[in-house]
Image 1 (cartoon, rainbow, N blue to C red):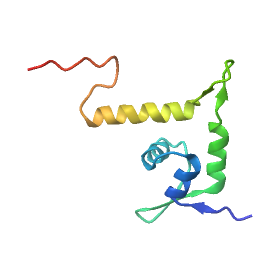
Image 2: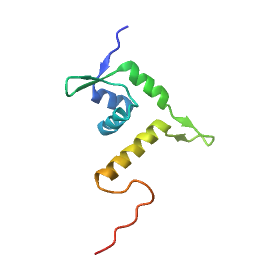
Image 3: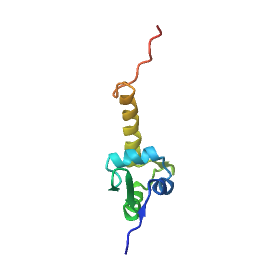
Image 4: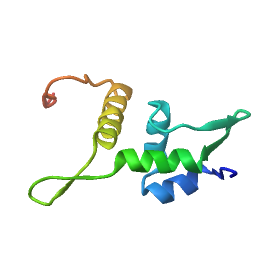
Length: 100
């Protein structure tokens, strides 16, 4: 059986996530990918199916769905990355800026 290769956009549509979120998952090694040359990135369909199985939503006792650890970690990693890019500290509560 030949495993189909998916583009970044195809994977984003299938997972219901943004391109940036996929980049975070890729850089945190949560989703396996193949790189051809400098810019061409593809994902094996089987790797995406495995990710979906790991990411299945857990149902708590109240019947509400919760994000799995993988997605929560990707969200947290993105917040830390954005904070560092803007020169903010990444631990503890953020203090309001003082007016000058």
